[in-house]
Image 1 (cartoon, rainbow, N blue to C red):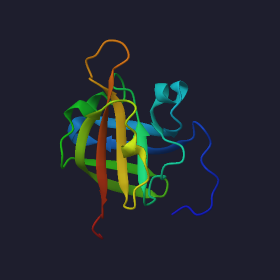
Image 2: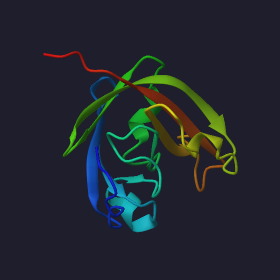
Image 3: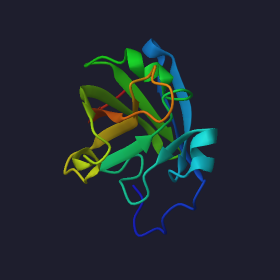
Image 4: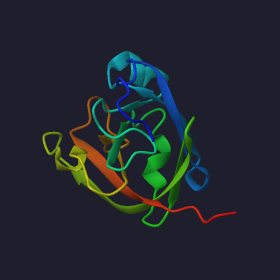
Length: 143
């Protein structure tokens, strides 16, 4: 676990995010600006870092890297792999919310992963809502 380190630099590569069942595989970079989201998924600055307890918040575009999320189901697994290790998460819920509802982005006491993308997937132009997906870290059994 990282202790008292400076936050990652904007655009720094933090991890890879993948879920083989739905064909999701994307690099996660620090930041949520337009440039970062063109190259991969973006980590919300200030949210927990991969491997830390708390809420790791990652956003991506619905028409590129996060398009496979349209097929995600409760119970699916998502892997977050960083230089510190691989972390498995299991989907708990997903819901559609208006863009101003940001409760799911707040810190959590347990190890959570929150994915955010615009919704609906087939919408032309700026989509009116957000799809929020919450997953909980599951302990990997010892080898």
